[in-house]
Length: 401
Ligand SMILES: *Cc1c(COP(=O)(O)O)cnc(C)c1O
Ligand SMILES: [Zn+2]
Image (cartoon, rainbow, N blue to C red; front, side, top):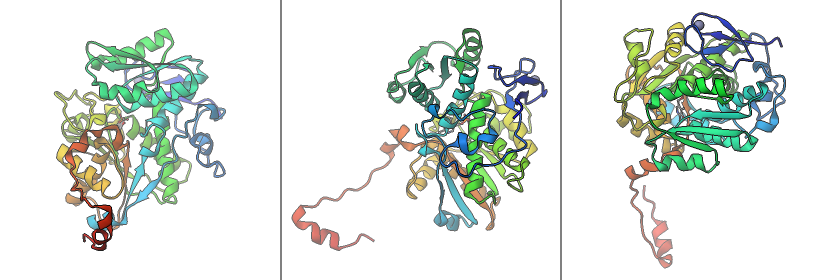
């Protein structure tokens, strides 16, 4: 394969694949790897995204030694919910089945390959949650020096799931919102590959979510794919994945992409509703859905461009709707964090608004595990029965329903 270029999402300037900067020096908008226009799935390569979809990556080899078993997550169909909401089919792409329990592993694994090809021996990221844990885990596996930058006010309960992997962890005092661009700038200067939220190769990792959904629906593609969105890297990747499979002729259409945010931090939705082409910083963000609480998403403008080009949708849901959806998902056996439950909350809103019909197939992306945020446990009180072992038979002989 000829070497792919990184292309500016606005001015279309081309940069070599072997550059480590992630934004256009002219527009300061995200770069994106040139779309793959020919390729096929290697059906004999099960359970490895870099082998199975190898022709859709610009890497000359799969680099198996970097794997933690990311991707190839289940698509869980819920006929009961489809019936309840009067739509054709509802399925959940269960990204909690990834090595560090969120989709971030796909992008980390992909960016790590790019870092390796470029010869970096140091990697890092800026995050307080799932991305930090993911980068720390892959750093531990591969033995590269790994630096995680966190805000100074991060609660220690959030540090523990990162600390277990033993990265270099730095609390940074000052304006946390500047850390994204400061780290990218200093990384360039000092030779540290900062695989932040929406860097081009993280987006490349996320496109495999779309590839898998295509395969798991026998290439009949859903009508809607609902994606909880913060920085915007994941939704961009998912859209790109469908676009590439469409380009190579594997699917006949691209689904309607739905961007869901929390009402307490919804900068992309606000801009979308105003028909603005630029996202503005959201003031005083506050939501229970911490993983989607970026007040100034670095890929926000590009998400708007993608939604506008494909007749996509953006909507915000309240914390109450998110908690209700989280409970409803748990009652179907899926325990996800509030950010991820926003996808079902959005589905319910679309049903309420009459946007979903009895013949529609909808996929919600469950981005990360509920076990990462155990504070919701306090909302649930189950009445526990007591019984002596000698009384077990009479106790069990009556059913509660
Ligand atoms: C990172 C993350 C998101 C948001 O993804 P972006 O690429 O930042 O838009 C959503 N849910 C979970 C659980 C996440 O960890
Ligand atoms: Zn540009």
